[in-house]
Length: 332
Ligand code: 8YV
Image (cartoon, rainbow, N blue to C red):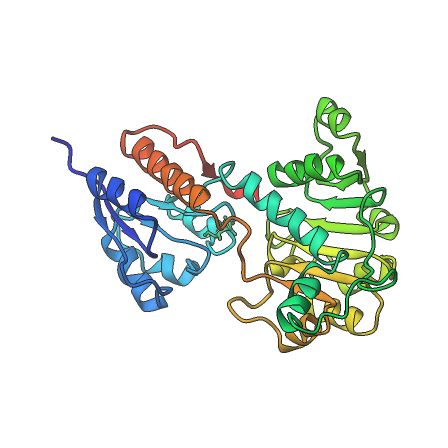
């Protein structure tokens, strides 16, 4: 019989996924649910045929330089691969795969939840009732007023799978869809979404009521929403980010929120995870922002499907074929 590939999984995964991995591979699973240290990652890279990391593992050029000769594949458990130096992996003939597609709808749902939560003061209202269960002042015509989102313009930055899933939902919620992307999407998709393409991100930002970020984090998109670009936005506009914190200049965003140059933000991701800037926490207490701890794809169903994708990628590669979700440097 063929020897099973030796895989090292860096984090605890759902039980069904781990059981399947144990059946199919010589799997070193991680019961200890904390991120690996760099030293542990290096050790894993020295012993495994396949490494299965997540967003919390920094597989940089340093780790890859110390990888053992056996390491042939990095099968990321996740869609984003910005924690991996894909160039360095490619140069060492280590292939990289990810898990796109299966977390699209859940991430889009959470994006809409944030898009509604901030202008409709969802968290504030829910909190109020918990704090004032006995002394609720009662309804009043001018109390807890937020802003409607229907009829407004949504600008989507990055119109890939998740951007399009957000657009479909937002259209059903009555928003007009606008987008900026490296390329225009196919005409039939544009038509279905009644989406307006903006070649110029600057021009789009200046006209939007809500801006939602859905591009990958790459060197080209780092601080894509720079201080200069954020200043182009209307002071009444809301911003939502379920992609990666690094795409927005977080310090600039904070300053603008503090100075009421933007109406609010819904953030699921941060520039320096796993910590959130204390200034953002303060803004959350003041109800100018709603913050979530990177929960966009956090459903049991998504996590199981992500695990299944990782398994398919590894099996296909081990069988000598091209894995379905290969990530090439040219794609980033
Ligand atoms: C995960 C994500 O929480 O897939 C991604 O890119 O951000 C989330 O689905 C995590 O990154 C998995 O590694």
